[in-house]
Each structure stands twice: as structure tokens, then as C-alpha cells.
Length: 151
Image 1 (cartoon, rainbow, N blue to C red):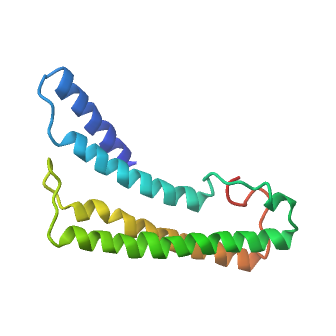
Image 2 (tube, rainbow, N blue to C red):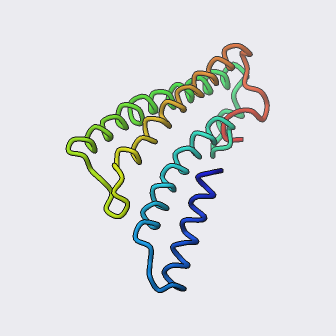
């Protein structure tokens, strides 16, 4: 919510300073871009946790309860693998590359590694929520109707 409010205020300031004051703000566009990256990554994690992401369940709807359970476990395992290999490991590699030599943003002068920090952070959150989903599936043994991913 705070990120959304900040991006709205930043873009509003950019528009006002550009078209009304005739003196565009140098850092507001860059800040809005960085905030959008953070909002997008955290939004993806939120959608995964709340099962609000897009999913195709044409095949799983035709499976038995046991088949749906196996498909859900495989799905969560794939998300976990992607989060570990791409988001966490790749994200830390990205931060490392941005730190040696230290890269700073052009307009704001902040370390780009701070922007990149959302990549491994979101990967860690994906893993935590993925483990919780797998544990819930193993505990209950079935995928509840309307609870499978993508519904």
C-alpha cells in the first residue's frame, strides 16, 4: 500500500512539474520505475500466496483427487526450484555484479543493488510460501475444490 501511494504521488509530481511548472523533476521518473519493479515482484508473491494468479486447470479438473494432489505438489516444487535457482541465486549474482564496481542510478544516485534486492527477497518469499503450500497439501492430502492454483 505504501509503495502504491508513493508511486502515485511520484507520478503526479512528475506530471505537475513537467506540464504546469514547465520544469520536469529529474528523479521522479526513475523513482517511479524502481517502485514499479518492487510492486511487480511483491505483487507476484502476493498472487502466489493468495492463489490469485492465472492458472490453467483444464487437465487437473479431469484428474482424480490423488492426481490433483500430485499435480499441485509438482507445481509447487517447480515454483520452489525456479525461486531458488533464478530469483535467489540469480538475484544475489545480480546484486554482486551491481556492487563491484558500485553502480548508481543516473538521476537519484542510489545504489542499483538496492533496487535489485527485491529479486532475491521475492525468491525467498516464494520459497517460504511454497513450503507452506506443500505442507498444507501433505497435511490435508487433497486439493480443496476451488482452492487449486489459478482458480
